[in-house]
Image (cartoon, rainbow, N blue to C red):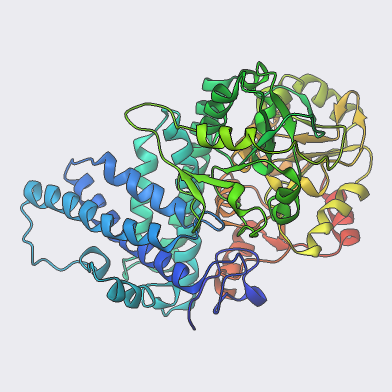
Length: 551
């Protein structure tokens, strides 16, 4: 095998990509990512030891967090970026190791895992080592499965923690767990039971991380409001911003104000339309396009430049490649990269703005509006109406259809489920899975829309909070007694994080699709089924019938 990667739902044959990633990732890139993750585990090994000795190193914590984020599916395809990051990892690891050894007095020849000691600045040797540092180095299938499940959950935690950090919100316990979990994957003394406990702990930390990011976003930009988002276009040149980073959104809007350039959201940036702080900008038009995987078609028609702020980048076509810009941990060979903020300043988006002024207005894809902005504050403000609706029988229950979208035609299952659910049910959603059904006209129940979009994938925290508050309000002791069913779509590692967050809350009976993760072994699946009643999706008819029996 020239590579091995099975971290996303589209892993070849639902087993693993071995020649080239379905995402477009070349084998050299996949291997370098494996090496960076492995070295990050080595940094974390010393980070845990340093913390036990009372030593904190925020720079090391942030380095590990950003490094993990860069390896999430569809974030970074740039070998040079990873080579530079790998070289930096030696410096970060040496610094925290020296701090620990000077404090604890440990001898340098003490036995440490290879990930905590290996280094080479020779690129050929790095590429050779990269081919050895991947998933398959763990021989026991169940241990390997749990180590990867834990690592992927931590990747999502890292992504959300990074977004919060950019907005000035951080919790040391989150950074601490990232390193604790990574270091644990190097410890051969930990068996299946130990790793299961760590996976559940990752779910608890995931909830805390999403809550921290929620506080960061709402503290900076206000609570999302129910909003009808325009999906048409105007006659001005435009900039399309995609991803999840609201700080980038804010600075782009500030810098484009009065410049005759409109700003449109795309993909997971759609929920930005519901934040009060962004509504004051007249040149903020609305959302353009659909889910991430339609980029090759829709970016072509947008005509203006596109800014990719986080993951969901599809390798661009030559016909529009020169209009795509990256920033943060996103990078792709040949694309212009907007540098990070320095000394508390702003990112400089003027190259994109000047580029936009030379382009034609976007080609219209569709017209009208779609609803959004139903995060926890907006939904819980209607809690009394919801409870009355449940008690009166007007609302039979809720179906959580959160998660990711992807290329597979089988994902039309979620659109068909949305269509087939009866008129007395309400869909709670977050993440890009909603693009399969968020333009369906499903009506309302007593003025409450039947599709309540809480926002980005990290806004799945809203769905957890809504369920918890409804349980309190109705006096339900077990959250599973609420009239809520879970039908989750997954694609990449942040969806794994959301799944672990739900499991950590004791939620059982989650349907997962369109396929079960390739990285979950039969033995680990048996544990998840026994402990949480995880189940694969079936047919639309079978699942709708079963969902209605659960409500």
